[in-house]
Image 1 (cartoon, rainbow, N blue to C red):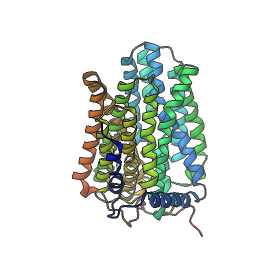
Image 2: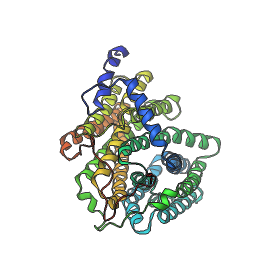
Image 3: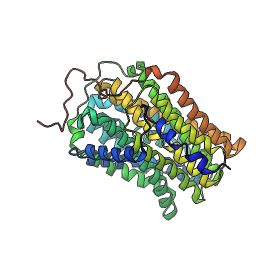
Image 4: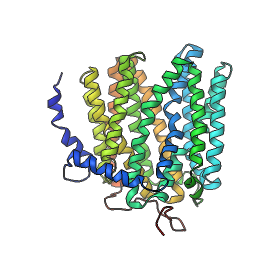
Length: 438
């Protein structure tokens, strides 16, 4: 097995590849500067409350898939039924992203958020308590997916109204980094609740957090103050924008790689061993560190390919050995690129669409990620059956490599945001900053 020092001496180049500049940043200076920049952003009145409330409202995203999987498998004693119900949930979510984003331009954010959080909580509660008939469970899962509150598109549409244009990339980076908390704590909380009470209780907890966290987010003054102008173009017209399509495809390939990694780790270590949870947590911690340290760097045409290359590099290292220590190091390296890819994607879309189209655009990005998650899990599951965990790791590496190649080949469609204003273009009226000094 390769010695760690032989790998670690290359780490400065890894850090450098995340940056569109030519100077290799000193890690200490980069991290200290990033912390200072984030502290400056967080001094914006009301922003900390907005970040925390949306994080709680989105927290069930890290719980529901696993909770539903355990509940349905426990009910029907097979994973095929669980796969059917999860597929139904994914279909509903894939449809809801752009549709809910569009509806917020017509009805406003608060009405759409309140209606969806109530409908989703009721659907999830019924799914947990309803008599065990498979087709009914699938219908309830579709309804839950269709009514997932559009918190992510909403808050990312609000951000340009809350901070100045120069702070927006840092805020997107902070948002992309903090969402890793969901994927670190969510599965652990779900497993703990299922073990202590029952698998159905995990769904009920998710339903409760959806409602309580959603109400906290909706109560934020910014949610009521920001009005998204009604788009003059028909639904789906944003897909004519190559930046939106490219970011949706890149996101799908990135999330597909992450989903395949999860399936491979489970195939290698099983659900029962501690290594499974620890390794997936290390993956998320790497993303958190990468996002906070480097995610704020401005996007350049080659940046996305470089960042996807970091994800591929780490997954490629995981192919060498399944020793838990080696995998932990490889996953940490791979994770360094994840949040920076997401923050760069948010910045690219924000700078390329009109304000009235931003919520729908973020909805299409979410749809792409859901498709990637479903494809990555499905293909890795087949590969695991054929070749063991190595098959899953190979599928993950293929997704990550495809993401890097796509970003490289279509780099001409990636905006150069160095020194640029990344706020969405206004429609017919100027974009006033809510907290701008008078």
